Image 1 (cartoon, one colour):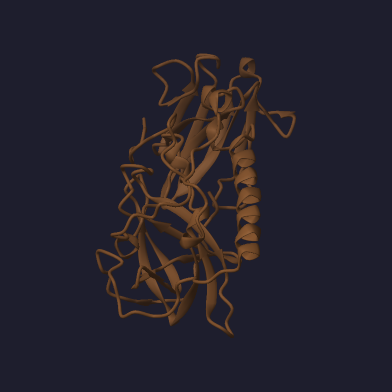
Image 2: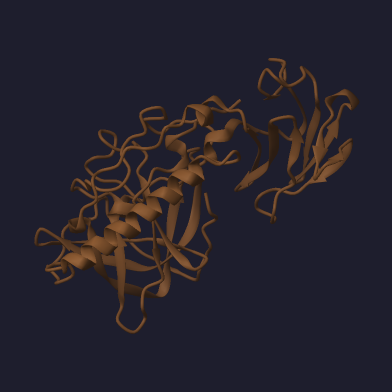
Length: 317
């Protein structure tokens, strides 16, 4: 999942639902057929890229473990006694991760044959995913690295031979519908406001919301609040399909930065997609903020993954 970048903000009162507001003329109507065909072609290309991304040997479907480190020494390997337990294909004892004052060091046993960038590893300090490109360690089809979430550190394990990756047959989608593609109005917050985002592990972080999408559906106007990630806006939302036809932890949607002259932005729910947590129990996805819980059914985008996870949950050691 991409890292959500922060902006300056001020506090704002949250509501429990993205409730109807005074009507505004923001719903897409009378779209020419050739434009609809072009939008659908763009969607199909996006969907093809999405499936290709999920099919990558180091993508989310390759996840094979996530173990939170305790301060001090954390032994790792496939033996059940290890705090960081690797898949059975790994040696029973491989070494030790040491967490000390926010830094992670690894000591590898000689027989484990662990490498990093092709070089054998015996001892080294590890860079987490929050400090730049993480240090990747590897043995056979397994690779692993340190992730940091708040003040907690974990070892994320991937396997290019993961059963989930080998069995992946794609993700079901609602049929493309122009009725779920909006040219929304962008209402900027000046200054941006501070919001609280909770992840699936139960951690809550302060993020910055630069404004709100305002769009109309069936004569009723709704608003949703994204955060900013680099040169895009990032939205986590739920709706009346959530936990029924779509993943119980909500869905993700990216949009471009709004045009600051027209204050318009395309909000295309056909590109709403499942978070990594819909495919694996070893991800740390953000959950929808209360104000991004829509009371309507958004019958567009990805449906529930039949071979994945249906509701929020998490496996930890």
